[in-house]
Length: 423
Ligand code: AMP
Ligand code: MG
Image 1 (cartoon, rainbow, N blue to C red):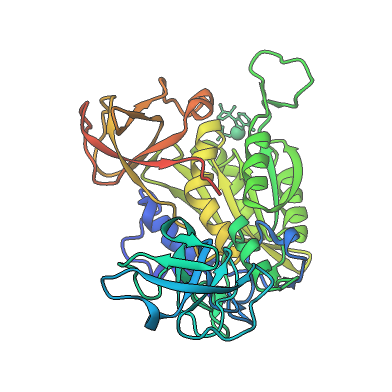
Image 2 (image 1 turned 180 degrees about the vertical axis):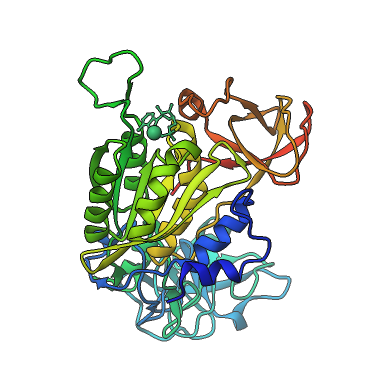
């Protein structure tokens, strides 16, 4: 395992005082390793978990050629070129109940959707297209040979990977696994993530506020974000701005968790006492990231009780903690979980708001994305201060103003990252 120093020495353009977002992620992702440990839950319990091994298909799906429609199964050599043809219906095939006889020239079989194709037939003519007279079925010309037939193995082929390791299992995936007749899957064990808030000014919900005090909201947003990622979450509460107490909390966290996420205590003034304390526990770097919001951040690995944990020291401001979580911690934790699909798509939308922006830093503004006259349009959620949590609550997307981006005028196109997905 490489040390953080080694990883950093391999990163070109590394400047801890003005680190571009992409560089910080490069360092984080080169340093992180996935956790080992595999469990084998039943398929439904595997929803949202990460596959530890490829799922290899033990069968063809579908297992036999079958009809895609209700109609008549016919032989290709009976299809009249340019003329109607009349065939004799000799039986019926249902889904789950096949027609076992052979179909000779001049014959056809009534088939239901999902029925196995009767012997010698290749094509299905939909029932709406034919005219019937008792068992005499007249088929109009223009039928495409092979139409309306589902081929064995067209969905999943025997012996091939149906799903690859590293995939987070979604509803379609657990259905797909069930379609193979598989009842249990190998998934990675859940990631354990401990978190706590730091600050002498923090008060827990339910108590009265005195002047200068604030409720500890970060412990709620962090808890929510970690839950959504599918982690096993360990809440270590509020820790006062006292190096001894902080050290104890970090030691506890390193002993029980794979990763530790903290809020507050990394801004310039506060880092003065957290830096030497963290240096005792392991390898931690303090960064000023070229971004807004969320400039200060600490990253590294700490050790205690013979165990180690990755550390993400996030800024204390309620919006900054969420922005840094989504853009650094989320990807790192997904990597630790063994996920192979980490990065989210950026969409283009027309901006209804002008935004002042200097090149040389990445900004994550909070926006509302809406379809207007057939086009995606985005506007900001009002005041964008890093303490204004309402801007996150009202938003449904981040407007991502990239490192090189300059000022945005009304009507310019910008990149947005949608906060919610369908799956
Ligand atoms: P810090 O990064 O510790 O200097 O904190 C920056 C700002 O965020 C200060 O205004 C803090 O009061 C506020 N803050 C820090 N931690 C929390 C928290 N857990 N919940 C709400 N606000 C916080
Ligand atoms: Mg603080």
